[in-house]
Amino acid sequence: MLGLMDKAVGSLVEIIREKGLAEDTIVVFTSDNGGRKYSQEYGHRTSGPLRGWKGSVYDGGHRVPLLISQPGIFPEGERRGKVVGLNDLYATVCELVGISKPPPPSAEDSISFASYIKDTSVEMQRTSLGTFRLLNGWTHALRVGKLKFVHDPNTNDMEMYDMKNDIGETNNLLNGQFSELERERAIEMCKELRELGPCPLDGSTSFKEKCVMEGFKYDETFCDVAPSSSSCRDSILEIAGTGSLGCGFIDCDLDGALSHCPVSCNSCDEFGCVDSTVSFVVGSGSYTCDDLASLSDPAIENLCDDEKAYSTCRATCNACDL
Image (cartoon, rainbow, N blue to C red; front, side):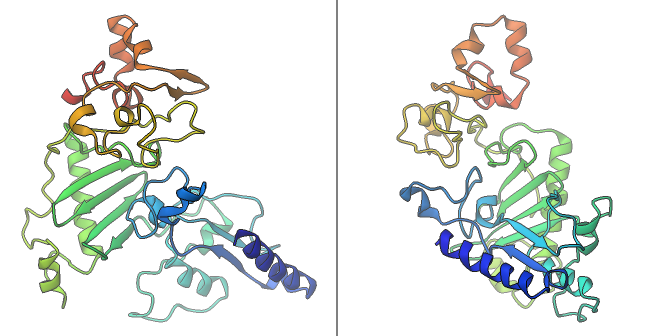
């Protein structure tokens, strides 16, 4: 399929060039969702290091490539690092071709990033991006800067991830003990996410009955953030010798996977508070928790302040008490 897609897209671009229309044509290449869940059975994990699959509120479900080309107009070979949604393409293309975006309710959630394509110093109008899953129970998520907030209204389970340092969404910052700053940030993101979706807190929706059925409360306690009852966490480090595989997409039958990835492998009861028993990758080297435990107490204490250590060597770092 990839070969056919390559040929089709390449043929189209070549025809545009041959007819001298390249500088007058905006080419957008993207996907409508993340990878398929069962691709790994065929030797290819389409979501790569991302957690989740098509339809998930985790990044593996909706984070996709976006390539935009217009020779002579857009910079070539450059990258952009800000978060945008496919819904933003509507307003962006309108601005690029010099027409006004139709008034609401048409594309009211579409925000143009046309200026940002040409100049990275331009301030982005979009400051957050919500993701919603309505199939087989409601879940939703909000990305603001490097932080991502995930919420299940039915259980009121809340998660928050540092996407700059934890692209695989393995270390829930709201697991166990967390700072007051993290709590306040989670509450802010929870409330913003609620207002973005179809179940706003003020009840101004024709879907209110359905919202209540899905677990949404209409009082100030809805976004209360309390420590998770579980201190179980996956390691954020890759397992050595697996080709850069980390938790969230590791084969749980692999030796040591249950201890390295107790959340992903559903083995928290037995392995949630023990050290990982596998070798893991740090920089260009391979190490074990025994290597950490063999150090002096001050050195252990210093290293255990790092998320890489306490998410992996949980017993040595007393992670269940963090």
